[in-house]
Amino acid sequence: MGDLAGKCALVTGGNRGIGLAVAQELAARGAEVTFTCRRAAGTTAAGPAARGVVCEATDTVGIEALVAEGFDIVVNNAGVIGPIGRIADVAVDDWAGNIAVNLVGAYAVVRAAVRMMEPRGGGVIVNLSSGAARRPLEGWSAYCAGKAGLAMLTRSVHLEYGAAGIRIFGFAPGVVDTGMQGEIRASGINEVSQIPRAALAPAEEPARAIAWLCGPAAAALAGQELDVRDAGLRAAAGLPPLP
Ligand SMILES: NC(=O)c1ccc[n+]([C@@H]2O[C@H](COP(=O)([O-])OP(=O)(O)OC[C@H]3O[C@@H](n4cnc5c(N)ncnc54)[C@H](OP(=O)(O)O)[C@@H]3O)[C@@H](O)[C@H]2O)c1
Image (cartoon, helix red, strand yellow):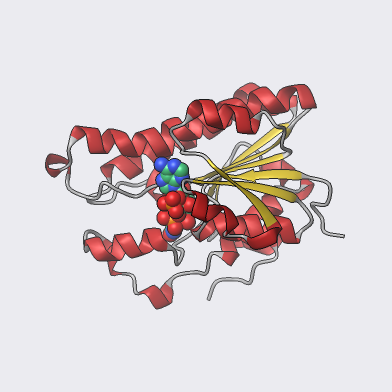
C-alpha cells in the first residue's frame, strides 16, 4: 500500500508536463487523483490512474465547485510563461492574462482549498513556484511578478491557516523538460532559453519531491518556499544528489 493511500488529491493542469507527472506519482503512491485540464481530450492523459475534469484556470466558479468536492491534497500547478517580451513590447492585456492564470487563478484554488480544508481539520496545498519568484529575468516580467505574488500568497495562507492544520508549500521544480521550456527555448530571450534540452530535468523528479511534501514528514517545512535543487530537501525526498 502506498504512503498516500486513502488520500484524495487534486492537481490543476494535470494533462501534461509537471502536473501530469505529479498526478501519476500521487496515484502510484495510492492517492485517488483528480486533475484539471482545459480540453476534453486532456481528460484521459493519465489513463486510468486519475480522473480528468475540464476546468479553465480563470473559471473561478468551476474551480470552487470542484475543490468543494473535498480533497486532502491540492497541487496548484497550472501556469503559463508568456507573454515573453521586454516591458515596452508587451500589451497590458497580455501581461494581465498571465497574472489572471498564475496568480488570480492560483488564488481561486487556494481560497477554495482553505474553505474546504479548514472544517475538515487541515490538508496540504503545494503551489508551483519558480526561481523567477525571487529574481527578475529579461522578458519575463509578468511571469516573475506573478510567481513572486504567489510566493507571498503561500506565506499568507500559512499565517492565516497554518494553525488550522493546513500545510502549504511553495515549491520551485527546477528547470524541467516540459512544453513550457520548449516555449522558453523558442523565444531566445534570456539565459534560460539557452539551456540545452538535454540539461533539463525530467518531470518525474519534481513530482517525487511534491509527493513527499504531501506526506507528514514534510510538516516542519510548511509555509516555506522550497527548491528541488536544495540538497537537504533532495535527500529527505529520496532524490539523488545533484552532480
Ligand atoms: N518547466 C519548468 O522548468 C518550470 C520551472 C519553474 C516552475 N514551473 C511551474 O510549474 C508549473 C507547470 O509547468 P510545466 O512546465 O509543466 O508547464 P506546461 O508543460 O506548459 O503545462 C502547463 C499546464 O498548465 C495548464 N494551463 C495553462 N494555462 C491554463 C489555463 N488558462 N487554464 C487551465 N490550465 C492551464 C496547461 O494546460 P494546456 O495543456 O491546456 O495548455 C498544462 O496542463 C507551472 O506553474 C510553471 O510555472 C515550471
